[in-house]
Amino acid sequence: MKKVKIISLTIGLLFFSYQIANAQNLKGIWRKAKTESKNVIKKKVRKKNDVKTIIGNTSTNNELGSKSLKIDYRNELVVKSPSETFMDITIQSFKGLPRLGVQDDYQYTLANISDHNQLTKAKNELKRKRLSNTKELNKYLSLVETKFRIPLFEKMNKNSLTTAEEINNLEIKKSKTQNITETYNDSEYQTLQSSRLAQNHLLNTVYSLGSVDILRKYFCNSKNTNCNEFNGNNQNNQRYITRNWGGRKSTIFEQNRIYSDFVSSHLEELITWSNSIWDKNSKEVYLVNSFYIQPNNYDFQNKGFWTNSILRNGASFGLDNKKDSYFRNSSKKWKENWEKDMLFSLSEVEAEKIAANGQTKLYAVYKIKVEFDDEPIQKNASLVEMIGYKIKYRYEIIEPIMEVYSDLSLEEKIGEINLNTALFRN
Image 1 (tube, one colour):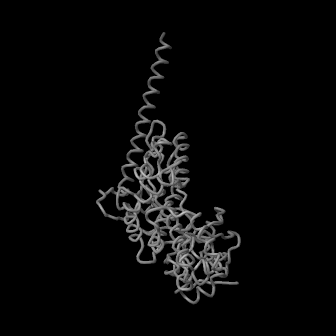
Image 2 (cartoon, helix red, strand yellow):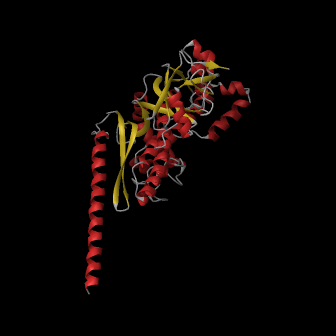
Image 3 (cartoon, helix red, strand yellow):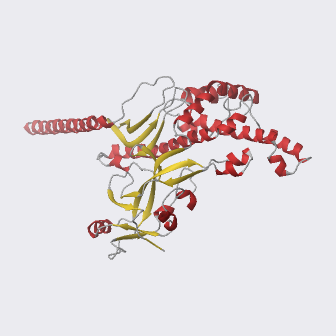
């Protein structure tokens, strides 16, 4: 009997100890979350026509098992919607400006999670966040593109949708008296083509940026589907495929009526928002490119690693990566050497650390100014050709210092490259 009591007492003490340890662990998580929350962006009340850009950290709360895990995402920029019509846009940033090129993979969010169940669910959240980041960047690009589609919107039919069949019939009609070049430059043809291009862009943009209420109103046919699919949890998941105005199985009459209602009610608001996020036709941003080094190929004479030109590595944002676009107003030295190998200067001590880690991939960050490429407008009188099916951009490097980091979060800085003094070789 005594043995039973002793065993029961022992189990009870172990269980009590576990509860204390668990409580201390929860207190630790809460204390950490409370400390980190000071850096989280403070929410502001949205007022009518109040367009804000907020820079800092964003966060998400997820119920992981029996514990609540607070994930803070660093270095994000929030482009505030002017009203409840559209959603805010959240993109990655660096030093307060948009981050283009190679994106952060948010791997740092897993650093302090030891619980297996929490770690598994946090990884799932990480996948969701990465996918969300891609979508958010596309939303941002779509909003910027809207700004440069305004000449098309001015020619867009605002009462009914312009169909491919309508354009094709006009081509056939014109072909009887005109050659193909004359048809393409015909004002009637240009107006129809411009209208269709503008309407397609508007459809994609509204479907990606519209609030849940807007999706339900303009893209859900309650006669053929359950509009509850556009709920708060699924609002992003439902935006993979662009639907028709009016939703599934809507008639052309319904589509025209709903389309014209959106245009008369919200098009001007969308255009005003798109005009507010860039200064005129340009925007200063940071571009992140990855490059590779060979840790065992350290140049002891020049004190550094030679790498294939960082400047010609992939761009993003639809940027033109031609030589003239890279260095439009930049240094003559940069223009002459942009395709050559460049020396990343690094002391032997720092180089040995990289060699010891076996790291071969690094990240270069440099400040650029992105501009809308208006050259086609200068060279071609055709509206369809000058605006085209895809907006084009060019950029110039506006600061000679490139910062080099060892991590995607751009927190472990290991050096710099000064383009004015850097060594190049063929």
